[in-house]
Each structure stands twice: as C-alpha cells, then as structure tokens.
Image (cartoon, rainbow, N blue to C red; front, side, top):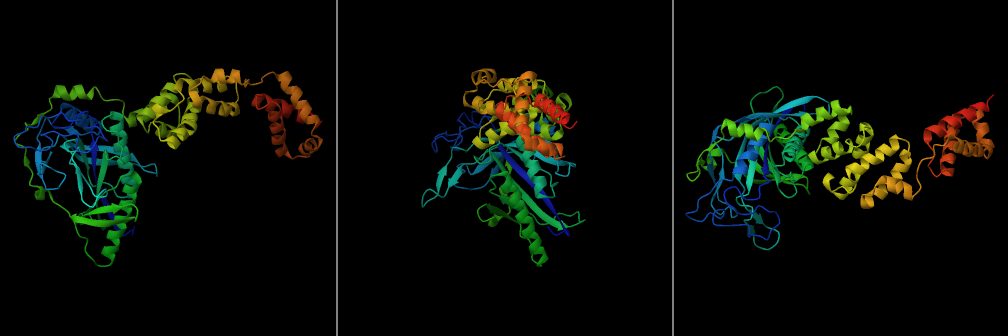
Length: 481
C-alpha cells in the first residue's frame, strides 16, 4: 500500500451458536439435513405465530461478551430488520439494533513484530439467520430455508485495524475464543463463522474516515486477508487516478482474486428497524450474569500465560499449544504423565500436529492417547530407549494406540546401556576402520560422525548415544598418545 494512505478496517463477524434448536422455535439446527426439513410455522413466518426466545442463545452471547471485556446491558431489545430476499420468508429478520446485549469491549492481538494491539468491539448482539439461495444446481434459483431462525451472534469491531494481517489475527482470536467457550465450532467452510469487512482509506495522519466498501463472501481466513489487501490496493489506485470511491457491497471471488459489485451499500435506515412487537425485552440480572461468568473456562490468553509459567516452555510453544482448547487439553494430559514438559511440547507440536493437520482431524480424534505419548517420553527420559528408537515406536503406536512398553518388548528395542557390551562394539569398529582412525588422528574431527553411524548400525540403533559418545571419544583420544 502507498505510504501516503492509511487503511481503516472493521470486521463484522457472524458466529452460528451451538444450540440444538433455533432462536425462536424448537426446530433442529443440525447441519446437512435434507433441504427445507428443519422448518415449522414460526421460522417460516406464518401469520399468527409467536416467537419464543431460546435461553441458551442469551447465555452464549453473554459468555462471549464477558470473554471480550464487554459491558453486559441489563436490558436489551429485539428489532425487526426489514428486507426482501427469496430466502427470507418473513420479509424481516429478528435482530438487535438500538439496545444490543453487549457493548464496548476489546480483545488483544499480538502482531508478527511482537507488539500487542487492542482492537475495540463496538457491540455483540443476537439475531436469527436467513435461509440460503442456491444458484448452481439448476437453471433456476433454489431456496433452502433450513437455516432460517438458526441463532447467530454478531460481533462488530471498532474500525481499529490498519492492515490485512491485523484483520487476520483479530478474526483468528475471535474464532479461538468462541471455540474455547464451546459456543460455535468456528467452521468458515460450512458457514458457521462468517466475516464481512468494511474497508476505507484516508491520507496518512487524517482522522476523518473515508468512503467505505463492504466485502462479503470470504470463506477462509486467508481469503479474508487476501480480499482486504486487494480492496485496499483497488481503492488506492482509484484515489491516485483522481476517481471517487463508491460506497457499495462487493463480493470476493477467490478464484479470480478480485471483487465484483453486488449492490449499493445500505445504511441502517434502509432496513427500517423497529422494536419487535412479539418479543419482550431481554433482562440480564446481576445474579444471572454472575452465574454465567462462573461457567467461563480458562480463556486463551490466561492459558498461554499459565503454560509459560507452570511448564517453563517458551512463548512460541505455549502459543501453538493453546491455539485450540482441545490441543491444550491433550498437552496437559501428556504432562500429567511426564514431567519432561519441553519434550512433551516438542512431540505435540511436531509429531502430533503433523498427523492432525495431514488427516484434518481434531486432537480428540488423534489415535495415540496422551497417556501413551507421556509414557513414550518417559521411556526416552529414563534411557530405556533412545530418541531415534522412539521415532520408530511412534508409528507403531499410531496403528492401534498401543502401549509403547509392549511395542519395545515385542520388537526387542530396549536401549543397550551395558558399557562393556558397547565397548566391545566400539573396539571392533575402530579395528575395522584404520583409514578413518588416521583421518581422526590427523585432525579431521568430522570423521567422528562416521564412527557413531557405524556403531549405531551395528547395535541396530539401540546403544545409548551418550554412552557411545563418551567411550568412543575416550578411545580415539587415547590413540593420540
């Protein structure tokens, strides 16, 4: 981006709440059911029906507000947001406008530079989802209203972000928090976490906001970052060419890496909001708020600090291990078995995460139990096996979550620590390698690695590396005399 200009970015995040039933009726929220099967007169907007608020929706939204430092308003009201789409049978969406349930919060992100930045949250409110129009399965547009009435929580940020990286980190933090709270699965591909970006630019040092555009249809974190970067560049080019930026809604095309106009940008008055006459105000008493607060789990930032202080692991490790609640729980179960916290961290970050990412599974589905991984780490720690042997045992454990001790006994992989036996092997290797001995004696220290390799080959990798290293060095140095 041209340094003469500064981008101003705000994100609107919709999170689908993990309730079993919809926001104002008893229909299922299950994803993937046959089209138009999760419906009833209430979510279809039939005349004379009355919505009844799902209490869980309120509790989940208050949890998010508390986790993001928001003020929880004692009284909030529902409003009707009026617009006409084929997938909105009622002709309006029940949302909150003038009096939302949560306001004036913030979260902190950590930039790649290591600097921390606070991003304000304007409001968090409850609303119901609309249906879905399907354009690519027929020559006609098909409508699936299963999603109508599914509970959403909208999280509106302040326009505090200045770069695509900051927007990516903010969205990642929001996803992390909703997953820690277990109120949304955070799946952007299935649409349970959706993000719209409001973007404008202004001259560096200017405080007045420029004309903004809204970018939609970003179904991954990388697409959010790419779309924002593209739109900043597009707006900058327009201003540099002396053209005006038009306030409009744009759709991101990930295949073409470009945006296309969808419609002119609406203002709030275009929706003709008014209080919903069928729903009473939501009142969150102090007692109710405090009871919800007691249900909050340890949040990501708190867990990260505790991992560093309790387990003495670096920020890099703690940041990865606490990236998801399930991964953090897996690590904590491993270290309940072994006190080698750093080795446990290394195994989880490399070997465990590699399998998880390759197979696109959750830590809960990982085939090796944390107890068995902890046992394997202890077997290295007490010199029963070497780290090299452990890397051979691990794939066997993956097959059926087998106990590492049983694998080691069955395959006769127990480490040789008998110094006499190791000494005999070393003597034999030295005797069979006169040329390499001469190279070592002439100062070519790198040949030491040759001897180590031969010894490990002869012992099938079972010799204790430290014992081998010490005896070999002692014997070769003795030949210099």
